Amino acid sequence: MLQEGEALGPALVADLRTALVDYPLDRGLIDLVEELRASSAEFTRSWDEGAVGPHVSARKTVVHPQVGEVRCYCDVLTVPGCDVRLVVYTVAAGSADAEKLEFLRATGGARTAR
Image (cartoon, rainbow, N blue to C red; front, side, top):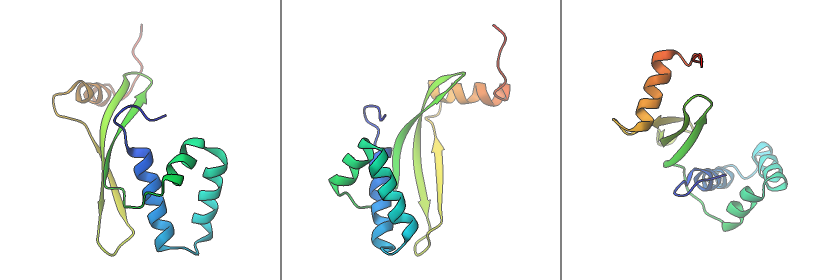
């Protein structure tokens, strides 16, 4: 479920629609859209809105079992004329989210004894 201010889901749906415009005969894409529409009311609502456009950036909240919610910025880097994309997740420097990631880095994600 998207939290307030998050646009990742709708951005990905718009990006998928763009891919379908670029590759209208791609059976894998067509099947994926049909499967998502059949299994997700949230996807169907976003799809029916008809937004088209490449996913460039959004915010996403990742829930980690040790540190809880980590609010990330999600940016997609692309090369013009190429389908290759690099998705980069970052957090604001000095933020509580950065501290959570530093904790995980320093501990290697090892569970702490309670």
